[in-house]
Image 1 (cartoon, rainbow, N blue to C red):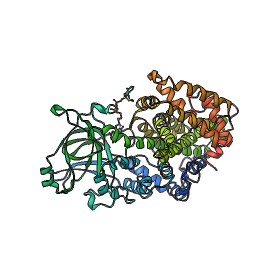
Image 2: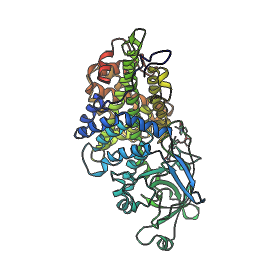
Image 3: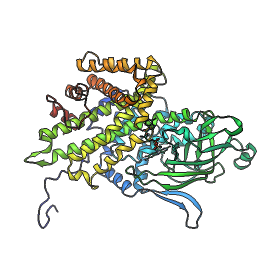
Image 4: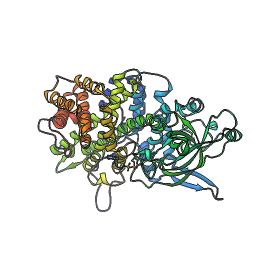
Length: 562
Ligand SMILES: Cc1cc2nc3c(=O)[nH]c(=O)nc-3n(C[C@H](O)[C@H](O)[C@H](O)COP(=O)(O)OP(=O)(O)OC[C@H]3O[C@@H](n4cnc5c(N)ncnc54)[C@H](O)[C@@H]3O)c2cc1C
């Protein structure tokens, strides 16, 4: 009943549900096609329809309202280190795994597979973000794991399976497996060189006696990790120090540390507690201790950082995709609300100043989507195309910094569009808002990404040339853009000397790439609005300050077709 004793309920916008999240997003559909994943459009239509349903929103709410619980010991006091999740969590992970968000590019070589997977991931990001964490880590672990052929042969069939199997069992008994990563320790996360966890080779005869033949050299691991997400995963890639003392330094090495050992026993990974986090609450992030845990080397001994960074590149792509997805979700909820809510006699979406805010958010969201899928194309092609590899090297840290950094401000603004309803836990905006910052913090925080961009630029003139070639594709369309790019490219030559200016540079670089993509591919109102506000005007202020002359209705009609 809409009627209370004292009043009737009216002028409350209904929730945004029932839309096809792919179908209602022209910018995403076009980007999928343009970047080489068009063959997946029919799958994305189906996925978009499913993700748009009200029951998926409810799963997302439940998974966060009932976060995981740790059971360190069983009722008899035996150590079990088990986690208990709400069924909604399992349903969300299962859906992502069913759609290959962890596996698609690795299943069989197919041009555009990274882009298709990126599109699916961006759609999932509009619903629930905690469940994306183990899916990302599993996806990202595959290239690193391929450096250990024996492990890969045994594990990849389970890792690439489209079946999610949450049971705590040795991998041989499971239908699918997930993988996490453990680098961060108490004394250092960005600077993993500070890791103190140690690994020592186990006497092969002892290992053989315990595990049998054919398992390769096993290592004994002692130490801890301060952030260790998805401790329920079937295995983790873990950094630990080898060598040292008398026997010279190999240094940090990467180890594959399964949850269960080949003899069927639990590996000695003790989950001390779960983190009580601002957001991302559906996902378990833990502190662990390795009390003589067993692991197997991945990559070369002493080359742990480059090995695990192979994983890091892919997780950073997902941070960009994830933030672009949350932006899109926040935008659609806000725009839908503004169309259904009136104030002072007119729908909010028809009020000029609100149109400015919404159009500005729409520009940001479309630019993030276009950039994210362009970056995914770099990942598709980087093995065969040196130009794309150089671009990936530049755009991954720059995009991870800028797009993730724009998230919290974007979320706050979208929330404000919904007024008080945006701020309370009944709707999705509060949760989405809390999800934004983590993409900026983990997998290389903002400053670390900007310093990494400087390192990439220092590699030689080819890197700058790759960027110049990408920007030149949009040359001659808009004089303001051309001038902006000329200044940017000039500044790259001396960028390395200005560590303190690295954030400014990274932001400008991403804006230039976004501007180029929109000028070439987006409708004129979007491209012009973006250039006028971000390129000509410098941008950086509050949302809703688009200059005069921007075509708000055209931008909003495209952002969410009515
Ligand atoms: C929810 C969550 C889950 C996580 N899950 C995992 C996981 O599964 N596995 C894992 O290994 N880690 C995980 N992490 C850890 C995360 O990757 C680290 O927190 C992150 O890398 C930063 O490391 P730190 O916390 O030690 O901060 P620090 O390294 O101390 O950095 C603090 C700040 O200093 C800045 N900074 C660092 N160096 C410089 C410099 N040279 N110049 C300027 N500024 C600098 C950083 O950008 C950052 O802003 C998780 C974190 C969170 C929040």
